Each structure stands twice: as structure tokens, then as C-alpha cells.
Image 1 (cartoon, one colour):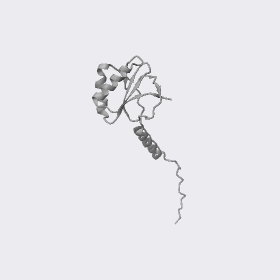
Image 2: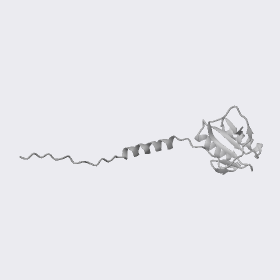
Image 3: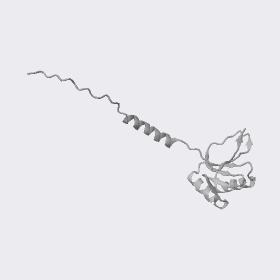
Image 4: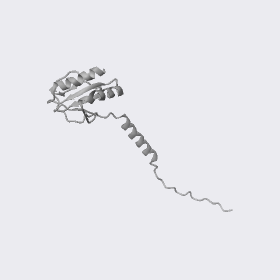
Length: 134
């Protein structure tokens, strides 16, 4: 009988990239979900120059006041009549976060005070005014 010793056929040495792609996609999803996005009010505000010793970092609600005393929340212009309704809705979504008012240097202090009064009526605490640090 003839002894058959056949050579094992060489298989192609290909690298399977599927597990690596799975890991990359899982990491991508993780970073997107855990990233903290910067809240923008929707209008460019020139802040007052000042020095402050107590920076406030826990922002739940961000309201901007433009130079012609318009209110902006979440990149949308809000009328004075709808301001309390919008602030109440945002406060109900995040009751632990405070509020920051970004007032333009040319805006009226009465307008900023109205926003702060409405926020205190709703129960938002603390209310801070954003300024430009030196």
C-alpha cells in the first residue's frame, strides 16, 4: 500500500479585522454618549469685564440677553411673555441645576433683573450672571 503523505495545503494568512472594528465602534458610541456638550445660547454676547473669585460651573439653564434686550434660550429667541413658561419647563427637566444669565455689555440691567426675578419665582437657585474674566 502506498503511503500517502500529502502536504498540508497552505491556508491564506488573512487578518480578521471584524473584532477590531467592533471595538472601535463601541468606543465611538461610548465617547458620544458620555461627552458633555457645550450649551450655547444662540446669540453672540459681549460680556462685562470683571474679576470674580467664585466661578460657577453647574449650569442647568442658560439664558442670553442680546444688546437690544432680546432673550435667547437654546438658540431660539424667546418673547418676554413666554420666558416664564420656558424657564419652568427647563427647570422641571433639570431641577438640580442652576441658571446662568449671559448679558451683553449693552443690555439693560432691568432686563437682567427681570430674568433673575422670574427665576427666583420659579424656584431656580442659584442664579448667576456670566462675565468676562480678566
